[in-house]
Length: 395
Image (cartoon, rainbow, N blue to C red; front, side):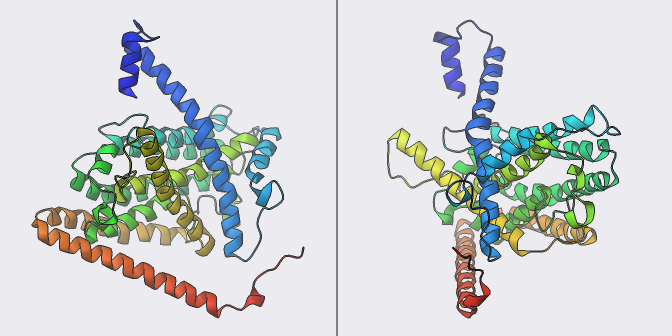
């Protein structure tokens, strides 16, 4: 991207235009393209897929009326919210209330700047990419607090306070888990971290040693908590707080909060894929740059979306935790464990190459054995299930 812009400023249409102006125009255009062509359809389709996954896991049908298999349900919901009246309560803060959802959405959207979809498919390969990611996602806390306080509603205020405490708390184990990867890669650049890995699982940081294997699950759990996902969705908690910090919102402002939540699922999967699963790395099967770019994008997207499916699976399976359980899990268990993973990774780096390879192979073998046992248990449960327990819709 930078080389292309430099060429335009040298010989192209932007010759003589200040560099800062060209870069500002490029960022705005890129943001519009990413938002309209990728982020919006991705969040919409994810909302439909999530409802279908929940339904299948709970022996229901799910949305199946609008379009084939209900595939256009997300579009119908979007149109419905656009047509709804946008109400601002009289007692609400007239300036902060309408601004809050856009602050939340901006924090989510800005994270796509450093996500590497391929070797050349990245908006900006910052040398402090991870630090930038942690910084911009913190804007979500500000937006949620604004929504909770400015609504002048006790349920909204409680939801905002819960969310702020939850996100700030779980940023600590998430950041410490990311440090294990930074130590191994020696850089905070997202592309640099991917290039420090290989295309095979034996070269991924997830299976580099037992400490990074544990750090991955600590990061994924903390990321679900930061994204207010079940079982950590206590800021919304419909059974307790009506709808939490979004109680007083309507129309598109109401949708923006959930737009960011659904899109944030992919961000979580993308960061996990980048740091722990080799990112867009693919086997050397072609030298064609176009085919290679498509293959890299497809590989990265499928890896990231697998964790989106896992998050849906978790939401359809686990109940919501209490507030005290949420904080106990973070401060008494995840923070100490993340420190252990960080220090263990540092100690692991001082071992000789052969010992590191042995521990890496043992970690990968343990993961494979766990997956095999998991699917064996799933198969057993399916065989034991009685067909009459499943809902069969009448045609």
